[in-house]
Length: 299
Image (cartoon, rainbow, N blue to C red; front, side, top):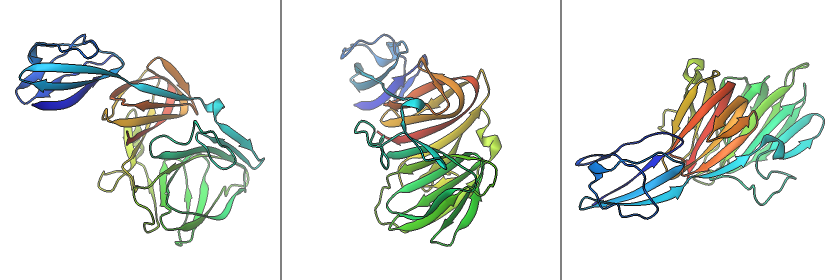
């Protein structure tokens, strides 16, 4: 018996390769026993994932709908403290919403604007993978491991809090505002050794394509994180049509940081996000020059 999965998503056409040939599929109905050899089947694209089981040349097929979770930027938790204007995609600090406690292992996405010369004093974290992506300006980082660096657009920073780390973050400019995303992911292992990493992302790797900027050890990402998760960043020109493929057993979170895009008929602008459960292939239409963060997460 051959077992596996295929998915057809947002207008694409897929082929499934068996050990004894190629199956092409069309127009399945829910829970149908199609009663035909795989090589005779062709099926139409739709917003569904198709689960199959092939036994003695007969295909049993089931439809499973891709679940979408829309997070509009102006519906997030919001606080303006004067020196800090912050929006929370998920519950954080004094913002609590039981419907927004995280997405898979993604626990925090805070979008912050920090006034010139202001910042967060020395404070502690533990058992969290913390990734910082600067959109405008620069952030000055210092920590209890002895690291002290400025992070600018096009650079990625990862801090494994592990058993405990203290750090400060500040906008060193006397005149320019700082705009950034701070991202927290739950770690795969508690009380690990704290560590820090900061690297420049090759700009050409992000031009009209996605670059893997953070991922597990051995994934060839720019920086490594202690979780089965990947973060991609892409910068796209108007009119581009981008295909991004996820394993259908996983989840996707797509965060627009600049510009405007359309995914599955949903228009997303800067600060909007779309979560997808069982995503498969996702087609992204670029409506204006855009930057996108795409997360590949456990299902």
